[in-house]
Image (cartoon, rainbow, N blue to C red; front, side, top):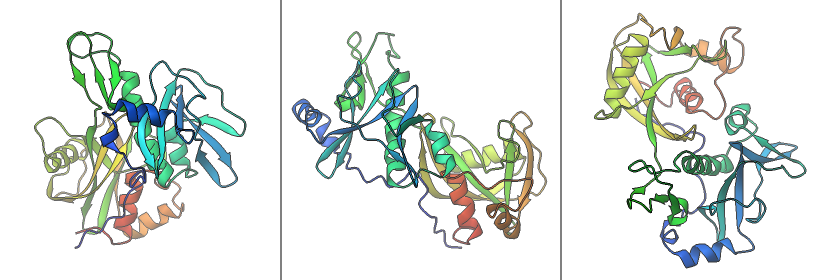
Length: 302
């Protein structure tokens, strides 16, 4: 079957990253002084949102609103207007605004689209700075460079770049059914696709087969890549795949999964309509929801 996946949430951000400006200190200073420059603000690892009648919107602030110890990180250009992100320890939300955990905002369904894609990148890069303040080679304090897309060590001249962790998440299918599982850390009624980190020296296809065997006890044959989604909690890149199951019976990795089941399209459709008392609809904003909906609609499959 032809694979025609829908672009997942958090993809297709409209900002021009303008990477050629990152190594230009004069350009960065000029953009930081632009009266039209705006920034996304994180405080206590939460995102500043404006509360609207239709949901949540990013609150873009002037750069001098919440000074930080480090320069704001350059995200790119919205047309000709510079966009940045800043992270501070503690800030007070302006009127009609609130600091909200980004994951919660995405799962609520009240925040999506282009701004969600933009803030996903903002959270990932700012979170990397927050957790990588010291050189991994010598332990000295590092400083940001290239508009925030690199950190440099003044002691050993080490150069450090933002990390991205590859993760596979897969539609495991057999006989017009898809496998979903309940992770021991999930809310009681949340079932989802299984996922796992790609290990060093491993391909995406090998990771899919290994993780499916480890977690579900299911051997897989054919594996195909479908689409990807940045997942900044803290620095994932989710590789959405579809895998052909060769077995029916589950042998669960009990440390991670408490239950798994096969769903046909009728059962999955009922879950999306919130008509299943045991299993709630997939979380908004997740690639799992996007992949399951595509399989339900026949856009992907074997």
